Length: 229
Image (cartoon, rainbow, N blue to C red; front, side, top):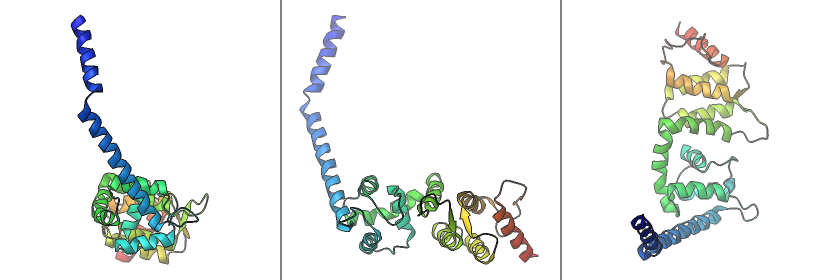
């Protein structure tokens, strides 16, 4: 027992007086503090002085410096990484969260981080969350539950067009010509995602309208099959 007690005392004493460990902790803390300071400084380059947020005009300037169009899907991916709550606006806390995760404290580092961010979003485990977020991000009014057809068509093209071009083109064409629906809700939006991932296209051979598909997709498939004869 005395030996155990002595060992504990020695270990505790050694741990509390380890100058190398203390120096490392101090250096790490200072580095993290400096990084956050640079992230904050970069935020205020684009932020509106009166609102204290990066607004649509600030995002335009940011996109210009990143050399991407403001309609580029990577801008939406950046908003997802920040978990931005209001379309076209970044708060300081959202900015900090996103840029710290991307390890980007300069515009050059942020620019270099975009390809890796896109790869992260494209992973199946993340993409469904990004797809759902894209819909929620476009709900700009309080208590809004649905999005108009034209905006949905643009959003489908933005988030799914590069991966599922034939399906998106056909679905968008149908949405723009049909007259039964003026808006799309989250359930229908998520149904589109399930459709492009699960249904054989363009033959639609494994589509079963008896399963739990949104009615708008039943109508779309019926229209497609009628065209195919």
